[in-house]
Image 1 (cartoon, one colour):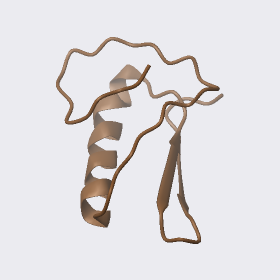
Image 2 (image 1 turned 90 degrees about the vertical axis):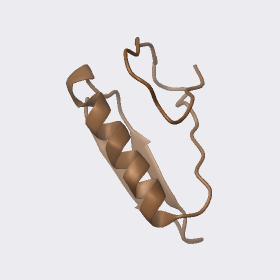
Image 3 (image 1 turned 60 degrees about the vertical axis):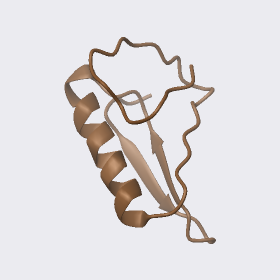
Image 4 (image 1 turned 135 degrees about the horizontal axis):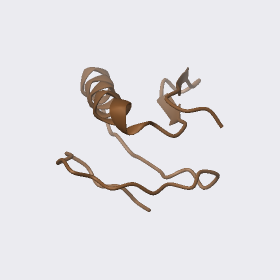
Length: 70
């Protein structure tokens, strides 16, 4: 697995699908801001799903406009 990489796909139904690898603490805020802006500009419904193939554990010291499912 790589760190700090995002893959953005345009699905046949027009849905934008973003898959992220583990994001380093130094880039986490920037990645969150980027994803929020993409969602805002794209409009429509936004959902997030935790990847089952990634061991996801970290501590937050800031506020988000969403929740994480761990």
